[in-house]
Length: 257
Image (cartoon, rainbow, N blue to C red; front, side):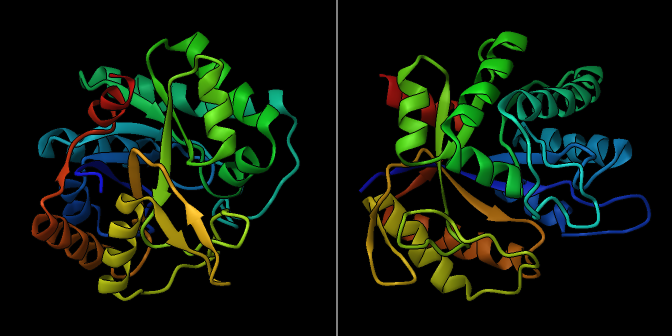
């Protein structure tokens, strides 16, 4: 079983006066945070607040670009060519990086959100285009993709890929995550058990199929109503199992060695 993992959370998803998630309590619990960049959620003020929370809590910052769909929260599928997807990610990454740069905080990774993330799973050309755009704009910034064949092939081409698994989402029999349009509360103990299953290298799909998983980072969702309780249950289980959490870059460097 792996004993070192990054625990990341999708957060920074409030917009204007509308508040979503408990970022003040969640962000300090994780080692990396994926900050919404304004297209599916978030705005400039929320991005700044999220970066400050991360910096104060010692949490590594990453960009979380999504489809331009505030109404659907970026979880509805849209058609984009590989170049369009790459440009969308680069545009949103640039917005967050400008804010983070003004605060002296580095942006360490880019992780597509929701249905855009799903597109990188289904279309390797999209995943490679996104990785290539980020590598050209910011060498060394890592791209987060779902652990599996696509991530492995993109990494084999020399891109700094970080492989991700999920503690609070189910997997289908093909090994893809099942995206929830509107996440509900989940049993924290069940999420913690899936986190340990990821560390052991295998999760079970909703159809009972064993899915091999080799992940550097483990995700949970800030818009889940009990995300803080889920995070704490995972950390408690990690402590009991002798598992240490560390920022995404440190864990990924261990793979390279």
